[in-house]
Image (cartoon, rainbow over the protein chains, first blue to last red):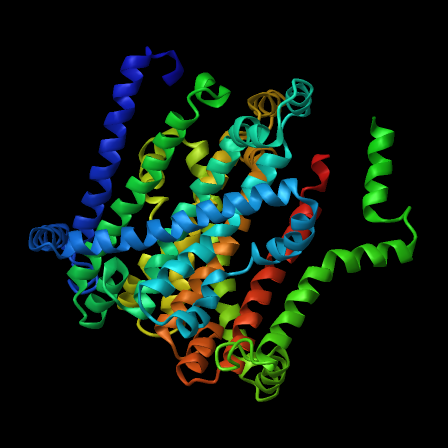
Length: 263
Length: 269
């Protein structure tokens, strides 16, 4: 049925449904809270949480928490992105590097990296350095793997044509290999960013030091449930915005690529 | 084409290559791991790194044996395993059911799927404090965290898998007189299986992250608790042994799952 509708009407209907589902979600939350099946402590009502969110927003606590979390996440993520791309491309192109890192990467990829957190605390303390490095360590693996696969799978004909046209190694890397690998590299980055955020929040919950993870644990320890729920909502919104931003960046960055043009 | 393919598979499985060559290859492939292990042993022993910061591998191995013998590895391992099994198992059952139903019934889809897509990127670790508020400091809050964190990846992959099932297969099954229920069980779910299994693999990785993180925060038992307890107490050789155990646990769980996945999807070729 939906397929037969004209695109504009269909789009507005979809938007209405999206908004409607949001209303339904908060409505269900509010009704459950009002039914007093659960105590107000276990499930604070929507207005209470919204008021708390507004209060934290006006007082500046929320903004400083978000900023702190995002700074740590982004620095760690940037380290993982740069290191992961360099390592992934080198693994694909230099046999000796591949020999050394192949078993390490395939052993490290499925490991739960959070388990290394106490080691990072031992080596780098409980402040920003250990959190940032922990974020980088946890999110680097998908970047390495995708950059490696992306560079490895470059179209042979493209490589051969470039070589027969006399392109040197340096230009080949920058003008052929990296652009051709970009879609897959970006996929790696899209996998890595949510991991970076998850791990940064775990680090803040475990080591303290403010940020959204630190604040939510503080509220939990004081049994301040509206505060915990307010932070959950805030963290969910931050996660949503980051993932959306990555999707938009991908479309911009890959404007020339088939995937953008066909979609 | 198919002939060369089978030869290639045979070569990959190694049946055409002599054992000695295969052993040599495995050794060359595994050598970097041995080098890292040797570096780990030598660097702290000769004083390149303080043994406080990095206990030599032999000390870690000894400490691991100690943990194994005094039963702390077994008792904490069992509670971690229970949490992962219960949380992940529950999320698989509920997730597949919800995902397939969403794909099968359009009205459910219209309401739930935008909600699910906007909640999907939520950093799952943030749910742990709420679960502690709800279920207290026991296994319940850890299982609930794992369940909540793993649910959406399973729902989303089942939903995508079920929607991606070839419509002509559904129509022909119906045309041949199969009931909706049979089509669901015998066409839609098997057709969605590859994607469902990939989603579960994703959820498996998430379940380990949440298991460790929740055990750091909730304490009392579990491998995550064990390593953070040993770290706080300054027993670093045992702490490293614990970290390696959890890492190996996660690695082998993924490998075993991968084997299971290949086995279950073999009919697709």
